[in-house]
Amino acid sequence: MTRKRRRLWLLLLCGLGLGSATALTLTAFQDNLVFFRSPSDIAREIPPAGRAFRLGGLVEPGSVAKATGPDGKPEARFRVTDGPNAIPVTYAGVLPDLFREGQGVVTLGKLGPDGVFRASEVLARHDETYMPPEVADALKRSGHWNPAQGAPPPAATWNTLDPARPPTPGRSGS
Amino acid sequence: METADTRPLGPPLAGPAPAPRAGGSLHRFANPGRFLRLAAKVQPWLTGAALLVLAIGLPWALVFSPPDWQQGETVRILYIHVPMAWLAMGGYAGLAIGSAMALIWRHPLADLACRELSPVGALVTALCLATGSLWGKPMWGTWWVWDARLTSVLVLFFLWLGHAALVRAFDDAERGARMGAILALIGAVNLPVVKFSVDWWNTLHQPASVTRINAPGLHVDILYPLLVCALGFTLAFAALVLARTRAAVMERRIRALQLAAARRAEAA
Image 1 (cartoon, rainbow over the protein chains, first blue to last red):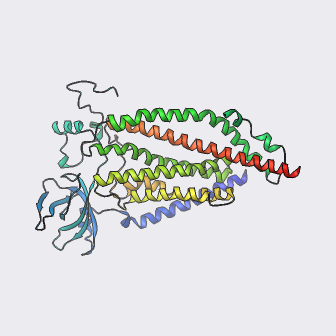
Image 2: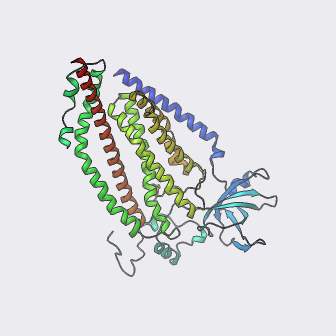
């Protein structure tokens, strides 16, 4: 009995030590563990010139301008915003399918001296909401949500919404 | 078939050849005998329930549930990916608990269960990574990024593989089980990192949808089939691990019987 008790305490102590060591290490490497920096992070601390980093945020509504470059490659200009701050981005290449105004994106590139971020890669970021097209349409129609303006309204207001209810009640037995 | 297996394990081992460790192994095998009898009763129900729930959940999720408004049909990957991710983490929590029990109370069944759990855990984690990658290419625009969530799940996969390999790497099974248990417990610090990586650091991976503090970020037409699939896969996971553990206990028992018979033959 006492040996079991001793092993239990030993294990708990080891767990405590290991846990705090991990927590300290992760806190120390906090800056390196973030996948991207927000425009506000950049405004607070401008990264050294010529160093590549990832910039993430929402595509600012109304900021997207698409063109075809001299070499025939598609080019896009848009602004990445996190609310208080925004950074203009240029990107030559094919944008992911989910790219749209109001969508989260993560771009990899360098900040030029003119304050324009030249991206070599643009990834779309999906948020944590999932809804059928009919529900999204109903929200848009009723004016509760404009996807170009950012995230959908609080999930509690729509996650049990039955888009087919007004015309035909009870659209499925589930 | 079961009747032969469900006889008490004691007599054949207790009878002859009280070798130095026979007393210990008799004690060790007392509980597995009870486990075998109980597991033989549970197994068909567990397997049947898993098949039934998956037979409802998978067609519902993969065929009859609606597409997502912007992901389209790609959202169906979620119904496999999310249950696999939950099982990868929940299974590892089980591995850690079993390992702690094995280390503290020297519970012989815990050793065996952990040994049989890790290949299944590695499988679901591999499926989680593969389906996630298949979703990431069309949605994010990349198969893989080294963000905190994806990297920590890859570490989880290596922990599963490492555990499966380590417990089998020793001639002395008990020693292997102890080493594996220590590895499993050390690796348990990765679990909160996997879970909270999307909250602690910004990642490309989206934050949790189902277990949000406020309402789940999924419409019920997507949430319900997901939960049914998760239940079905969890039952299937449990059925698989139980079947493997039963087989392992029986294997041990056969080896012990053969050993006893050999000793008897030697003594005669």
